[in-house]
Image 1 (cartoon, rainbow, N blue to C red):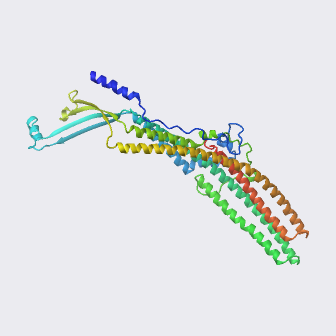
Image 2: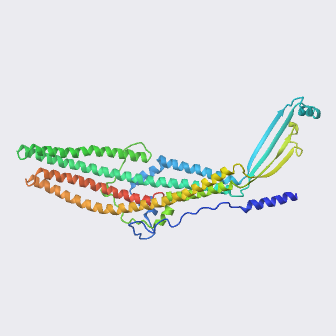
Image 3: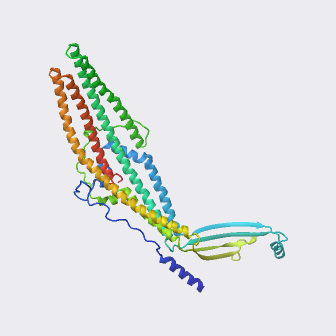
Length: 469
């Protein structure tokens, strides 16, 4: 009993000491700059902090995004990955508990009559069979002396949290893609309307030139050039209709439905461009961007793997115990206390021949951990670069749109003047055709820049970590 007490005290002293055999590697500091390029933050607030429906207030886009979050298959896979990681994390929490096994067995064997067992069995029991009936409960428990189980649990937790960050990353990308796909659809609608309007204008010009040709005022060359201009405008219409159908199909697949027409109640010219787009400070990206948080959690996983690999080099203390009832006759199987038995043992196992392999595993784990630090640095640089890109787009596209708008207004007036002068005989057909062609291109370009502005705003929101809240 004294020996048992001494061993118990020593055992608990070793177990609760919780020796740590590895030191975690910390994240690198001061990676993010003080501010984004070409941006002076007003304060620490950022559009990336805004809830999704506060940033995107168009009801049609909101409904499309809601559908995508439920039906998009990438999103569903991300949610299933979370479920799987949660199961593994719950399993890892059971590592501290002992393994319990219940066994009930019965056996019968007949040794040879000429064997020592057969002769002894016949002499002492008068039977030629050996029977054994056993029912026992076994316990197997490994003491977490070096923190191996603790590190396994920490790694499982970090992996579980990584799947949640992966879901957020999928959602932010999905939100941006749905919004940008819808804006592209509005752009194609606007361009189709412009093309049809321009075609009518070309038809009117062609009728006038035909009348002038009949009157002998122009040659057939004028008719041919006017017809070519009209056909150019006519060819643009089926091309745009094709692009509309393809964009609708792509948007349908994105929201997880079969290809179909997308209902839209908005017009591109009615979509407002937000003016107050404060990006905040780059340091906030470290806690908001899902990909950066995932890279941070990857380092936690790598630290845990190093801890497990290093703990494997040290001795492991295993305690086993079993107890139950045992008898060589079925009639005496459950006779208590005569059939009771018990066994307790403890052992320390030190790897010897596998030590080289375990050391290699440890070195590989350390190398993988160093790679995660590099990947974390890269994720921060990529995030800052993406935000800087979108800020530049927002700023420069605003200037481009202002210039393109003035150009379109000038060409609209020029086209009207050319038509009036042509009807009064003060301008030739080439001037009219040139003015109409320039007007068509300028109006199409204006819709393209407006769409790029909307897409850049959504891109800035995503790059700042918005869209998952």
